[in-house]
Image 1 (cartoon, one colour):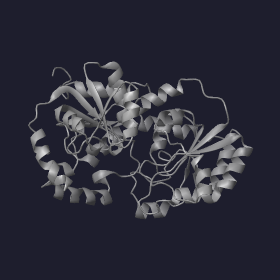
Image 2 (cartoon, helix red, strand yellow):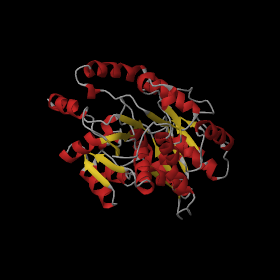
Image 3 (tube, one colour):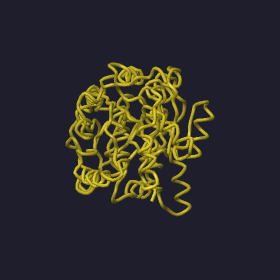
Image 4 (cartoon, rainbow, N blue to C red):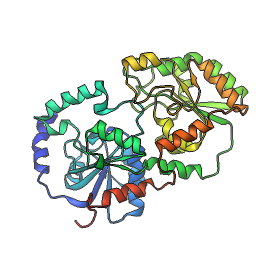
Length: 386
């Protein structure tokens, strides 16, 4: 029914005059104020008054947060949100058009994406590609059901650019190597003095479509041992779940204890800058963490099952280029390797440096500027005039 109601609005906004200097931004289906779109939005607001930048969201909490900072924000499903979307010339998104208002998408869409892909994405993934084909069938009748072609996609390296062009089925010229806007914030945080205190270990697993609670379950089963051994090393554990991961279900007492470990804020760059060591699995978050030059280790307790039932990878897992750190099968292995690193035995520094140079062309906190230049040069995007 929603599709039918919005179809006339979609058709009407296709002929609505657009304001070339009005840009709308959004992230993670409109649920959060985060990721690359957030940091680029803040950059545009601070440095380009000629652009009217408006954040779109489905969350009242995000609406209040953005407006309290003095920046413009609208609920994407409100009358004002529809009007702003109908008049905007450009949408800047993190995952896709549903980050803003999928029914009233500006004619030009810039996708900043949400991380260098380790897992195969979009049309490169056989599982995801099947879903996209089904969406395209529905899109014959409801054009807003599928993602529009992107006029610009941001990437961090030549390798990533080629993968994104393939995954999104766009011309290679549409993908520019600019660096990720959120990494500007990470590099700026790294330049600040560190907060004193215990060494921090961050566990950041990716999501699973099948064994959705696997990472939390394995962690909970080993939590007593982990906290005891990390405590002996004067270290503490923090946990960040993937934005797509479900709420961890557990009884009240373990839940209260687990919640005390969770990092729920949206400021991922600040979190990574405050972390001394990262533990992950198949999450591409570690590829950004390479910019810190701090140790990384990989907990691949379900590697074969993940490759068979979840996602294919672009690389062979275990290649030093892709896993510049110890690969562990259990939390006992993880803690043992953490202990070795704490004692000064970091044997993966050279591997991290090689991976960093491969996956990141830039490490100068100029990514937002390069995105803006890519958008406004060569007639790609015009931000002048009304």
